[in-house]
Image (cartoon, rainbow, N blue to C red; front, side):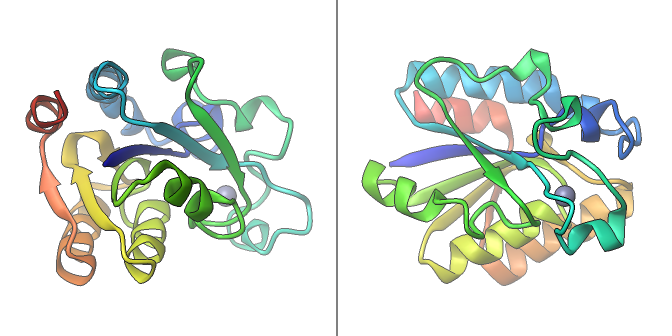
Length: 178
Ligand code: ZN
């Protein structure tokens, strides 16, 4: 069983302080993939930043997506629907102290479909943690993006080479789920 994990598709990253303009391109393909996944009864799990003032990441990036702030909300186009799961994270990995691993295990998930932001950073750290825990990883390349084209390229290569992520396109993946 596959689950779609949606990382950091939050107002702060798509239209806020840390937006670069490159983030919007994933909204349309991701919307279509999520709708296919819901139809195919695959779990959808949103994991997004909800930072506390003491989080080490703020030393690197400054304040962003603070817990309870507008910036920490999933963008309206991708608003979670009933039956979806929503978890909060406080650092790059979607697995680090979020309960994601136990949720996936209780749902019988073996394959993590990683989507969202950013390919070389939070997707990469989430892939590493998924890999360490024995999950297979699939990344629809049109549903992930990074701050720059170079980071997108190096991120995808890293995901494939080091964590064995299968790189696919979202229409192909949607067909497979159906
Ligand atoms: Zn953060």
